Amino acid sequence: MSLVRLIWSDELLEYDFGRGHPMSPARLDLTMRLVEALGLLASPELEVVGVDPAPDAVIETVHDRDYVAAIRRASEAVGHRLGTEAIEHRLGTEAIEHRLGTEAIEHRLGTEAIEHRLGPEAVEHGLGTDDDPVFPHMHEAAARLLAGSVDVAQAVWAGRVQHGVNIAGGMHHAQRGAASGFCIYNDAAAAIQSLLDAGAERVAYVDLDAHHGDGVEAIFWDDPRVLTLSVHQDGRTLYPGTGAPSDVGGPRAEGTAVNVALPPRTGSAAWLRAVDAILPPVLRAFRPQVVVSQHGADAHRRDPLSDLCVGVGAQRQGAALVHALAHELCDGRWVALGGGGYAVVDVVPLVWASLVAEALHCPLDFSQPLPEGWRDHVGNVSGLDAARFLGVDRVEWKRWSSGYDPADDADRAVLATRRHVFPLWGLDPLRA
Image (cartoon, rainbow, N blue to C red):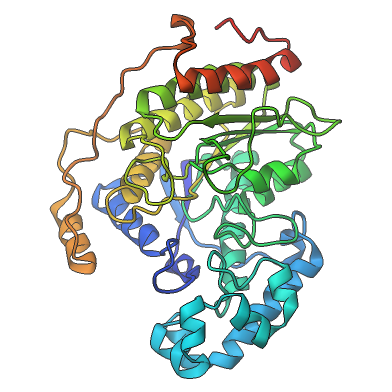
């Protein structure tokens, strides 16, 4: 039995909203190149597998049938109108402009262009926006991401591997009937549902992305078998505007939605303190049989789409805590997914390469320079200077048991969550 199954093939790069979109497939390519340069792909404990797109029946376990059909129609219609050249160039600007005119470029296939060419149905399902423009073969690309997360979840549950990793996954904003926030199909929710369908009675979902994991929470809002725990920037200051500490789950599942809404500019030490103050006690009370986690790298201070200041080392420590809890509570059953992250060159590859290393039980040495070959490639393809080191290895922080500080914004956010959630699990909000 291998220790880790990693989902990867170059076909995952086809999830591409086009030039200029923040969700660039380059972040995946650079991550996998770094994983290889660090020697992780050579580990005998790692198996790397590709997957075919998930069939509609699997997607429809977490998405409405008419939504899946709308995705198919929209992606096929765009491909038909643009022709094979655009598909070959993955929606290159020249191909779009030649066939649809400058309006499509200006709107990045926005509402006006999509509604005119594909009909109002696409707009109703969240398609054709700046966040979620339509591209040829979008259904197949999104279905492949979803299939990867389901595959590793099933491999972990069946005991074929102990940990599963899909850095291309983590599309946590997609709703049952709508695309949202760069997310077409919700692979995290599909992985969780596949575990429930396979017999799991308690699945914990831990979301460390800077943005609230709203789609996964909504899909399992009233299901007591699924705990969704999200540590994110306060929704009053960041998309998607949800994830308040008072949101604790539906009438049949109170306490199974847990939201830690941190203030902007929360740094590494305060972020780790918040994660540690909420995650271990709640997971120990819930007693999951498997942990599914989302590791969006956008909490970093260099990320252009959030306002948190969490370093690479702190994010690695957060992943290590999730990993340790999976071993403590679930016999090591852990599924780790990617997610957000838009500092494509100097943050995302570092965070996710560290995640793969953590899953392999061989954390990276942060003091060692990053491979020169990888750094040269980054410079050649981006024109930017790649990071020389991973960053600060370990962040010193104070545990909640050191005492609550009412003058600290992050502490107040943590206490708000504890007050709303802990009593529902028989826990004392004020005690460690």
